Image (cartoon, rainbow, N blue to C red; front, side, top):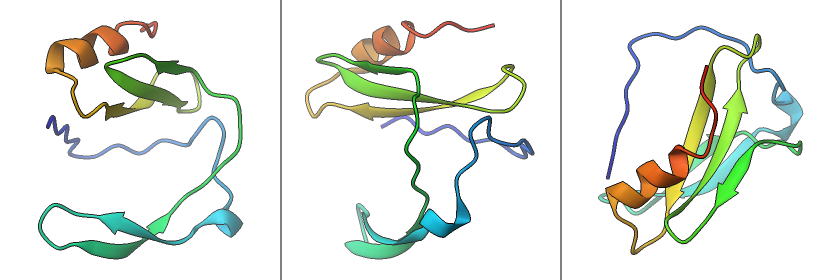
Length: 92
């Protein structure tokens, strides 16, 4: 598992989530079972890569200078495979 942490980041999404689509959904934790958490949803066109190592989606922030990447590794993927998938996105 790879965890990334940011101390503080204040930016607006390039394609904002609607508050009306936020709802409680089950979230599966490693130690506490299933918990209901607030979940944002949106339907839009995003950069996306899917291969045998992982699925990655890019959620850009306003201004095209920063983005958040959500990586969902396959059960059998290695860190090297995840890095390979991530490299398919362009970075400024």
